[in-house]
Length: 231
Image 1 (tube, rainbow, N blue to C red):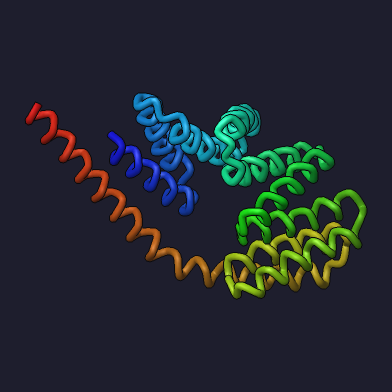
Image 2 (tube, helix red, strand yellow; image 1 turned 135 degrees about the horizontal axis):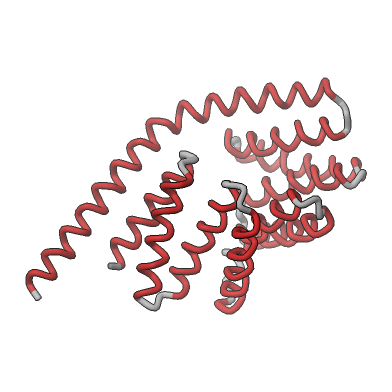
């Protein structure tokens, strides 16, 4: 069961990257069910965190909020601060959608602090860049620019297309809020270029990952059936 649980989780993650959220949800729910049957609270909580992210992507905000809060409490009990990064990021996005900008900024600040503490580069770039947008929405453009530059410099330091993509998206939003449409267009164009590049690289990889995860899942099921026959 443990092996099958890992397979479902990995399949869910691959489908999530492909934005096939229904399939991702199906696999993460299967993972949570298996972890629950094994009394594996940490494994179950990890799967629930992904389920909350899926509901966030699907726009089912109330479901996402309920699960995020449940997971936040569980991770606090486990004293697992690193795993709280994605939960605080999810909560920040929910509050932003609901126009509760102060709460969104509060969650982003805490997510950034945790990202820095654990050297989570994606967390640093994402949270710093999003803080730039939130400050812009609150009318504090100078403070917003500082955080966008922090995110941008971090992305350049690691020369990652994915990190740059995250930062460009926030820059485009920042300049649109500021009504600087020349720069908004500039960053939107850079964003599109990097999206196309990443999509081409990841498409074949994602297909291979689904196939590999499927085969691993199949083998684990076969092992389980053999074990049952032996018993």
